[in-house]
Structures are given as structure tokens and as C-alpha cells.
Image (tube, rainbow over all chains, first blue to last red; front, side, top):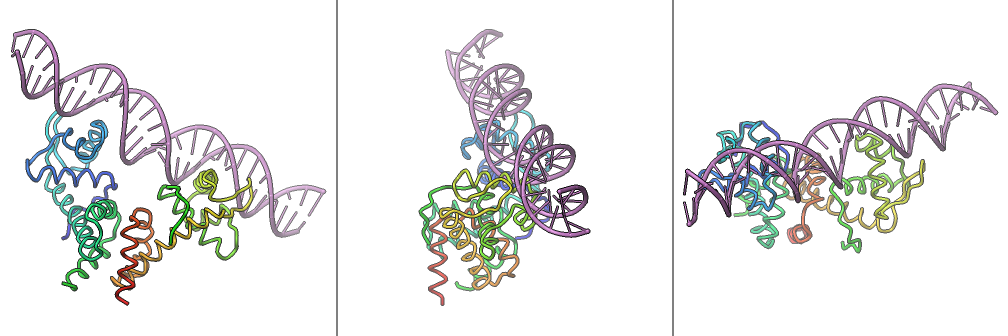
Length: 129
Length: 129
DNA sequence: ATCAAATGTTAACCTTGGCTAACTTTTATT
DNA sequence: AATAAAAGTTAGCCAAGGTTAACATTTGAT
């Protein structure tokens, strides 16, 4: 899992991107309200994040319209999601953490863990199969 | 490792507390400049953090004087440091991460990992001895 | 004892990322 | 087609946590 998107986002913006990815997987596109409801945040907060992600060319969004990830946005979102899944799997399968706590921990750690550590975690899990 | 200090600090304040603990271990007390140099932050930033930690009764500090952890402060600092060490050990010994990267990751994750996950990590490491 | 250097503090500024209130635009109902 | 509801936006507020510049205090050297 390698990304050509060099951009370094804040944890917050990575969260938004990941949620947009998840909500987009079914419907293809998503609205600000969907994101706000899902993340339990206000619409203005989401709005501002969308502007920021758009400025980074990670999504497309016309005033009053729907949101769609760009190629870069999708790539980066998938990478973040991969980190999330990797961590969750490790916590649940290897450590035996409760799934909801594992999700929660993964959700925070995914933004700050280094590439090397994540890679080694993947290697470690594969080894012990 | 259980703490009776219920206080929930920000990651930033936890960092300060941990550094104060480390710098205090030798000398017994520490100055704002020591902390600023060690953390590579400005003295006003450190100053404000000290005020905040003092308000939470985690340290003692008189104007222009030295800083000393209170009983609560020491307890909490030790707990944070334990999390740090646990994570570093796991990264280095179990995953084979480079020590400096392990330190760095531990330094961020120590603030956000759940109790359950940390406990399970400890148990896991003890099991595989 | 004086004065320069080191240390500490204060004030004011910036950015991020939440929020609410108020407004605009779009959508849907009748 | 009119209008109510839903969706989106804007403006302005707040807190945290960084910064620099300027000032105050303490310490150390002569």
C-alpha cells in the first residue's frame, strides 16, 4: 500500500477524508449533511473541512452540490483506511481487544503511526498466520 | 500501573509532564529553560503549560523559581512514562522497529491509546517471553 | 556593588478546529 | 407556482497551543 500523494494532512482532515471515502463507497457521492450526521459534527465544521480538502485537490465540490473524491483523494483515503484496518485487525486478532475499543484506538493511531511501524505490524501479522 | 489521578490532560500537557519527570529524575527539580531546550519550544509556551499544570495541582512553581512535581504530578507522569516505555519496548523488541522511530511513535501514541489496549499489550509481551 | 547575561513573564498575534446564529439556496409538497 | 423544509454557507465566537517582541527579575562576573 503505497501512495504517491505526498500531502501531509492534519489528523482532523484525514478523518474527514476517510469518512468521505466510507460514505462514498456505496453511493458514489455524499453530501455535507451525511458527513455531519455520521461524524456527529456541525455542518459549518464539515463545510470548512471540505473547503480545505478541496484546496488540496482531494475532492470536488460545487456550491450546494455533492462531494466526490478526486483520484488523489481516493488514493490517500484508501491509504488512511488501510492503516485503520491494519491496526484494528491487530488489536482484535492479535491482542484480543473489544472490537469497539479497537476501532476507537485505530481511529486515533492511524493518523500518527509511522510508515515503518505500520509496515512491521503488517509483516508481524503475516508471519504469525 | 494504576493511577488515582483522575484528571484528563491534553496530549500537549501530558508531554510537558513527562519531560518534567525525566528532567527531574536526576536533579530533583527543573527550570523552564531546561524544558524549553529539551522540547525545542519557546519559553513562553513552556511557561503557559506550567501555569496550566500548576492549576491542576500537578506541580509547584514560584515566580522565577524552579519546578517540582507534586505527588499527583509524579504519579501521573510515571503512568505516562510507563505507557511510553511499554510501547517503545513493544515496537523495538517485538516488531523490530528502529529505536528512534519507536521512541517517536511511542511519544505520540502514549497519549491516545486506551487502557485496555495498553494492558493487553503488556500481557502479550509477557506471554511471549 | 555594579552591570551584563541569563532566565522568566507578559502581551499580542497566528492557526486549527470546534461551535451557534443567521442567512441563502435548493428541493419537495401541496 | 407558492411555500415550507432541508441543505448549505457565512460570520463571528471560543479554546488550545504554538509564536515573537518587549519587559522584569535573578544570577554571576568583575
